[in-house]
Image (cartoon, rainbow, N blue to C red; front, side):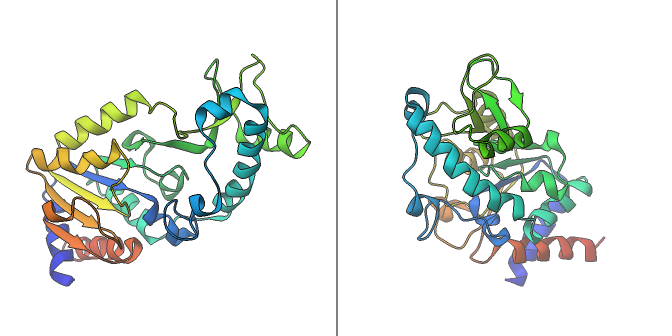
Length: 252
């Protein structure tokens, strides 16, 4: 693996447009379960679809009940070595952008600049009104839930919902367009902890290769893009990313 680490580090140091793409696999090392593996979130819960949330109070109450359970885990979690390594790349001026499928906010907590992060699936630490689109503080909503308000509503009368993308909900157009442009124009594209099975996110590495970008994938399981990447590492994200940064720092 040493040769692969050196290859990746050398490409990043060329100071081209370096884009990192992360999925749930980077956050499992912080204790946050992924969605699709055995014992993951969808193994435990049937998803509440967006149309169900919008049309039935019982569905909204169930959604919020699950959110409280999941949010407690996210609150306890902390950025791991993988998150910290990406933040270090940003601090070194070597990160053009970070595209993430994750909704846990750990990249921000690790120190990656907000303007570098494109959240394709939103962020569960924000609460948004489905009508007026205003953001409400998570702390306030948690107090309301704990006091018995099982399906909180905005002062405008709209339904409040964690600012994440549910099944059947439209993707955030601005975020997808920005991610697509960054992928198409990247020189180096690093996938970390994603199975690359969810669209449109799964197309981002393909767009990068169309621009002849150097594509590296760090993931424990197979992805549909394995046969087109330049470097493939089957190992834990935190361990690999930490070694990449250490390799770069040792040669500065």
